Image (cartoon, rainbow, N blue to C red; front, side, top):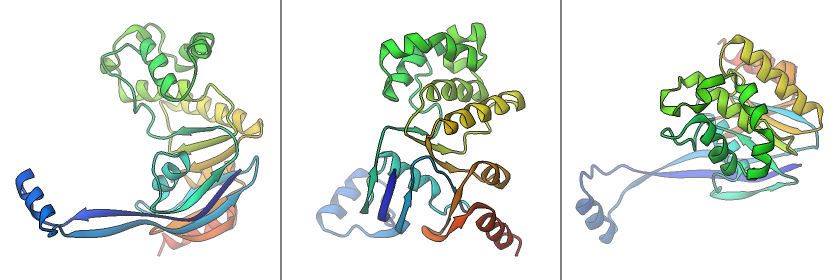
Length: 242
């Protein structure tokens, strides 16, 4: 379902102390701009089979979220390629794409359209989305008046309305209060039971142990290990206790 070959992502970061557009343009024309290169991912390759649930673990800055963005098509790798079979639903940065001046109801259609859902599909799922989000009468209030938890609940409720071939999840199973977390976890488990291939990033090792068939351990942009969930999680945990 997913074949990643030699994915490399490099960022160029200017190290000149330029304080104006004029200085920038002068340096650019004189070819005197200086950059540092930051490699977020380096020659990352792996394959994921249909129906597998694969966890991606690693410390902050390891390249986990960058990798998910490349697979989701949000970022273009500097080198390498990704082959996907089937439709993809990325659950990354929930709530990005919301218009905070619109109501929750209006954002269902706006955010749903961004995720690729048709208006007719969203109308058929509207009541289900509102019920799952537990926002009640607040659904007709502007999103700018929502708490961060309410925004996450609405975003998750919209994003989880289909059973995709490939689901990409970045640290979103801690949405809302404890009761809603249990409900969102059950929804994710339901999607997985339908044969959805899942890529999951999480710092919660218990969550990874319970949900994943295999684990990819990233370290400073490189794959440090790939294999059995319990074995790799144990190795990762031990490395962080030193």
